[in-house]
Amino acid sequence: MNQVAAVTTADKTFIKLRDDIVEGVIPAASKLSEMELSTKYDVSRAVIREAINRLATCHLVERKANVGARVVALSAKGLVQLYQVREALEGMAARLAARNMSDEEIAGMQALLDSHFNEVKDDERYYQEAGDVDFHYRIVTGSKNEHLISVLINGLYHLVRMYRVQLGMAGPRVTTAFDEHQHIVNAIANRDEELAEMLMRRHILYSKNNIEKKLSND
Amino acid sequence: MNQVAAVTTADKTFIKLRDDIVEGVIPAASKLSEMELSTKYDVSRAVIREAINRLATCHLVERKANVGARVVALSAKGLVQLYQVREALEGMAARLAARNMSDEEIAGMQALLDSHFNEVKDDERYYQEAGDVDFHYRIVTGSKNEHLISVLINGLYHLVRMYRVQLGMAGPRVTTAFDEHQHIVNAIANRDEELAEMLMRRHILYSKNNIEKKLSND
DNA sequence: ACCACCTATATTGTCGACAATTATTGCAAA
DNA sequence: TTTGCAATAATTGTCGACAATATAGGTGGT
Image 1: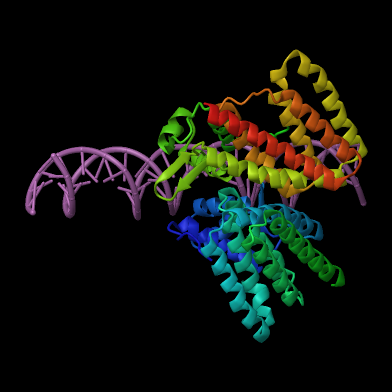
Image 2: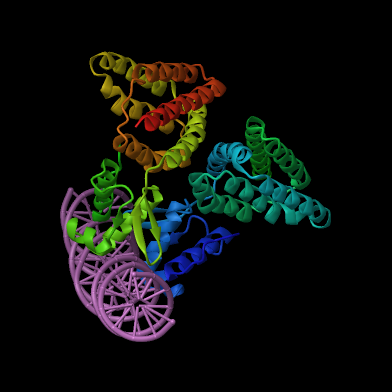
């Protein structure tokens, strides 16, 4: 997923740490010791500190002065708040995508959906993982709004993925979500900003409700 | 504006730098030399680096690996994109405020508006500066959503203020904005989420149009 | 037994020096 | 004169050591 090449060791360390946190290799709510990580990842404490600071801007860790940093704790409340922000930002992204995406970009997104349509039959799980991410990614970048792109792609999406991975999200919503995606693309193709935003907000709201239901069943 | 006490020197340096950037003491689009700032603010380069990193998370500076950091450039396009995000986030904040604010908090906000109403007559300028900030601040915190609070208060609002200060925003919209604020508070008091969000979005949209008009006149 | 205080330990914050990368200047060739 | 390359200067990235702060453990008093 198009990441700007990580040139500096702090970049690489940041990405390694981020992935390990998202995947749960570093447990949620655990304390991050700078010394310990420094030896474990074999870099100086300075780059660990910088990496931790960047993780904090992703809302993946929380840092307290003179105390240290902890990986965020996953909670139902946190999930709800996360999806509330997603609803607001991605709704606006869909609106702006309907305004700013080129016809070529829209065609490309439709092609993506078509190709996914086939894969859904073979392996439903696939769609939930990569397909959904791809779709939302294109909408957000299609908004052409730097703030939206930055906050969502470099920030919240990693936290979203962390919830998905660690709470084992992979539901029967696959085909339903596919239809919702198609309707959103249609609205964007028709340049219907109002509808695009509304459908995207409902899509995310449904998705949240689905996850909440799963949570209460465990 | 309730800021958590800055304990560490990196905190203080960050805040000094942030204010100097917002006020234009450090010009927009200018390059930030770590060495130079280190001598000028009389701290080590390490704390300057950390401060710059935090400024980057506020979207006040942009950093490139092995090249350095620059203060953001102010542009009409940037302003539009900023207000698009504000519209989305503060609209949601108003919705959640209508859901989550206590009756006492709402009463306090109404009292704030009342007190402002008197000051508006004496010094119209005051309201634009402090009053508007206070109002939006209360709505956002009233949403009780950590992500919204963090992104807006610690992030975008400083950029908003930077635009206001450096482009000399202080318009005849004062009393108009006051009425809009009152209507939003009414919607929140009535627990009308839908209306609260809609009014807040229109309020921000108007505000954006007003600023854009000012820009084109200069 | 419990609480307060003090000491010792461990962790984070800050600093200056060195390494790596980028920008600049000067020179030479077309 | 302009273009390309090379050496040099300047800036950022990384490191290990020291200082400041917070945590843990123990001691003494009530």
